[in-house]
Length: 566
Image 1 (tube, helix red, strand yellow):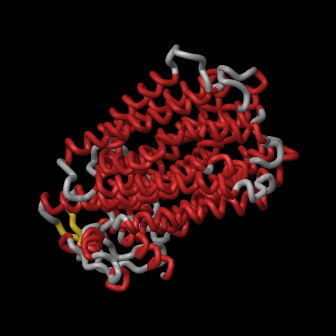
Image 2 (spheres, helix red, strand yellow):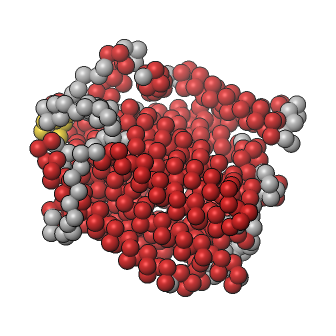
Image 3 (cartoon, rainbow, N blue to C red):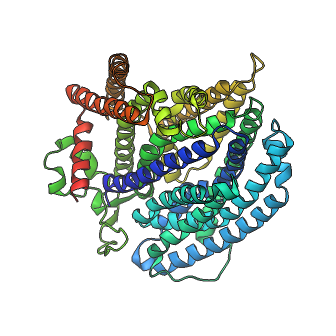
């Protein structure tokens, strides 16, 4: 499957997931606002997320997909099933042990994370945490299945996981919040985790499960070798989250919830663009890093998809190693014939072209998205969250938090691709060491004795962490792979930045001209205003890129039309 098609499938799934995620946060904001209950749920979420990332989340991209990808050939299929079974059994046992330990010591955890909370709020957070910890076992199983399906380039079912998870939280909260209060959110998390496993089960058709647990399997040893540095880095990251939560709990009631809602807005473009592109590109980069070129390294693109696309861009897409489609339900043929070893130089060249094209697409989308969200942050937040008990003061605080997060948004998006590029080369140590450095940057900015501890400073510290990580990763990538000159990467970045800045100016002028004529005090007016602003921004930015002759724009548009038509 070609990267463009894979990214499109993942992006559609992520779009549905992120939109439902926004609905989830709307429901939470409407029902609980910036209350103690919302703070307690936000704190419990901050504890469970690092645990998941440490035990399985980081392993998916860093170790499972690269290693599983080495076993996807038909003649190794039985070996793949054996390896996946062993990993599933190990993950289940590991999660069960960790969850029991954390359930026992939940009060002590909450005392550390929520040091600034009063006793009653900490007790509520403990109750929520214990329910949500139970869901982690199912999330671990779901993560292994997701890695398996991604390695086999079956992207459709994993793309549904986020949607069913968020939908479960929304439905359960709406049905049971009056009876259970904020505990309905924790129950929704548990049911959502169940659905994440269920929705992916059809993708396991034909798999032979083995009730076996062994650390001596070569694949398991490789996974452990790749993941060990990542695990150390995630431990450092978890320490950073602990410090962040501890500091945030001291900035005043409601601020932790405001940071959560602002993060939802931040994660919207990251999930739609960065995650989709990164997971779509990882299997191909992994093959190229192993010296494997698809069909000799140059696979002729489908003429129906590329007849209107510039020749140079078609050549780049051809170098991406498009694969026969192996989506769930499709038949795989000629898998071994489509893959052949290439020279180191050929593989490195294909690797660079693939990575650069991914970065270009990322920049073209993430830069205008960031500028647009910054300019429209207040009307968007009013539309999304200012309902029920969530008032104008909550919108103002959340908008301030997002404004402080926004400088790091483009860096975080590109950084995810850079991290995956190192993972594809079986290098998990470098991103970890850079991550440790970035956490130190965060601590230096957040915990500086200059001035009072405030919520905006914590958000700015997160931005500094993302930016420092991306800058160092860019430098190390250049050192590892050599110069990326000749790919016009700087040109695309400059043109996308100029187009985004011009779009931002247009949106500011629009706010002056139109906002006075449109009543934005009600939902209908906000929908009209935001719809008009977003539509104008997209059209203006697209025309600006066309005027500046950014060829990747035409390529992107043609690929979107083809995927939608199909």
